[in-house]
Length: 119
View 1 (cartoon, rainbow, N blue to C red):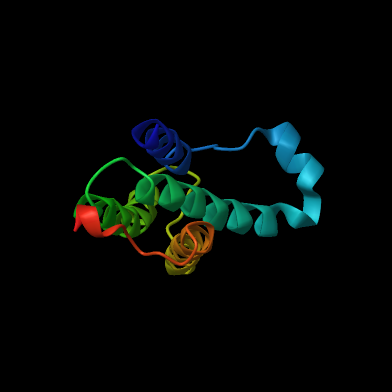
View 2: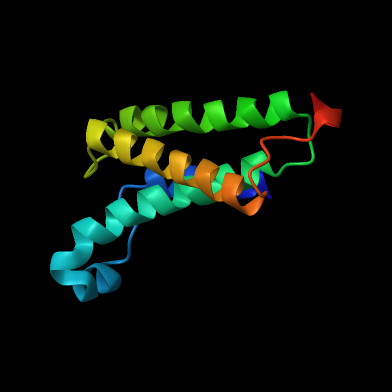
C-alpha cells in the first residue's frame, strides 16, 4: 500500500499538468493554498503509512527518511518538467507534513514510540 501511494504521488508531482484545468478553475484564488495543503497532507499520510508498516522499527525510520529525501528529489525533478518549477518552500512544507504524520502516529499510538520487541 505504501509503495502504491508513494508511486502515485511521485507521478503526480512530476507530471506537467497534475491537476485538471476544470478543477483549477474552480479553486480560483485558493489554488496556491490547496496545493500546499495537499503537499503537507500527502506527506503526512505517507508518513503514517510508513511508521505503521509491519516491519522492524529501523525499517520504518528508513522509510520516513526516504520520504524526507523524496520531497527534495521530486522538487529537483520538477525543474526538468515543462510548466513545473522546484521550490525549497515545498520541501519545507513536505517536511512539515512528515512531522505532522509522526505527531499523528505518536498521539494515535498512545505516546509509545515503539514496542520493546522490535528494537
